[in-house]
Image (tube, rainbow, N blue to C red; front, side, top):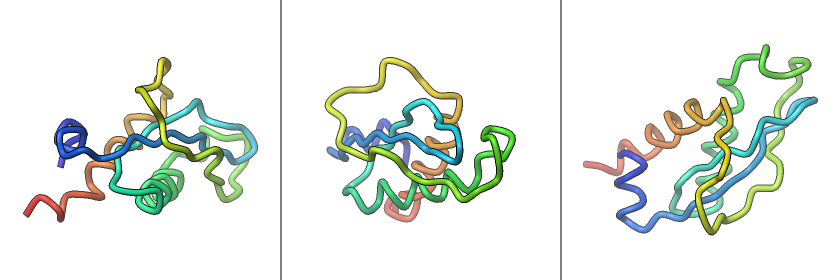
Length: 94
């Protein structure tokens, strides 16, 4: 399911930062609930290249919260987050 389809179905927008020793810019996901948002971000964090962070420690999801509007700045990691976000709900299309 695409992000546009999720928006049309009333999914909630969440935003968070992903941190190892440095933090990505804020990224956003569209999900049915907070648990799905956390799961998507955790999977995305694993896929981000280690070169995006200072070292290879396990990433933490920081400041996950509902978001009232789309982010004004897009993080480099957003394309990876969007791919995982859409893949997470692929099975719901059928």
